[in-house]
Amino acid sequence: MNSVKTPARAGNGPVGEAAKKNLINNVFVRKTQYTTMTYAMPREQLINRASEIKVIPTLDGIVNRVFTVLGNNNSSFNDLSDVVRYDQAISSKIISIANSAYYSRGIEIFNLQRAMLTIGFEEVRSIVSCILLMEGIIKMLKLKEEDLLSLWKHSIEVASAARVLSERLLIEDPQKAYTASLLHDIGKIVFYLALPDYAEMLKGMKSTGDMVAFERDQFGIDHQETGYIIAVKWKFPHDFARVIRGHHGDHSSNQQDALLRIVNASDRFSTHTLNSRSTEAFILDKERNAIALEVEKIMEFLQLG
Image (cartoon, rainbow, N blue to C red; front, side, top):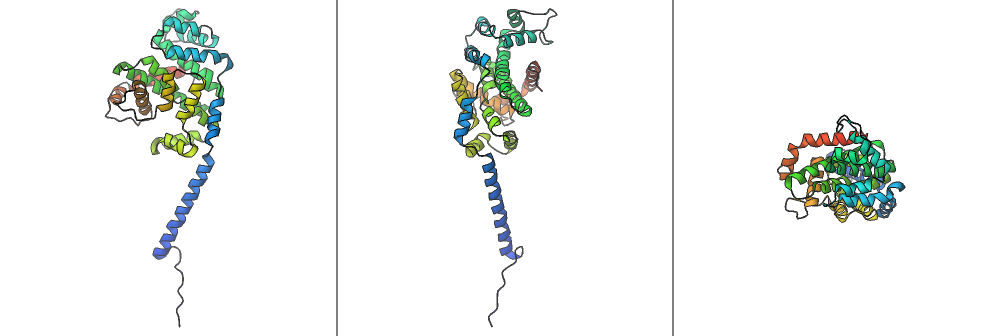
């Protein structure tokens, strides 16, 4: 009489273990596919969103002129004053800051020129960069408050660190590095607006992997490219556009492009991924408290956080 073989029960013996592993793998694959589908947005849609972003109409004419002045190493006090004085919002903000506890000398200031002199040319250049980007661009897009604060705090921290590196390494104009760094992640605005879960994705990628690679894999485009589209549309200076497009590349101390090297190192400093043995890390670690105070000051000026 032929014996009838009964199939091995799932969970018993080697066959059962293999079945369980296959089941787990299939569930993982399905879950990964579902996650990808949840996040997926065609590259073309993100490009279109980047192309459609606009600044406040009243600032449309001033954006290009201000960033051109800020991107020019030879720009003067008068060059900046000539642009800013025609914008009431920026002028009033500078006067307000000049009368703040950080700069006030006991005499109230009502005149833009006097306010700029009180604050100092280099500081004014930084403040104007922040006001223009924050008040004229980011706030207008109506990001969620937590997204706005996260993006803005990171941008100011990178900008402050970049200015420190420029001053210490003597390889780039500090204000140019500051403004370029302030703009470096502008492409993330597109992802924040198009993807409700983008902030959570960023948090998850900080400790587990390469955000740029993840963006490219999921969407066929990363925030460097969407930022470059914005930079070209708004006619940013070429140096700023170049930084926006390539700040996540390999920019070691051997990198010939000083501006990219500085922004990349400052970005890594902010995200705690900078090589601790590098010259940049040595400099920035010593200035960590000063950078934190600068971030706090700018956040207070703009009434954030």
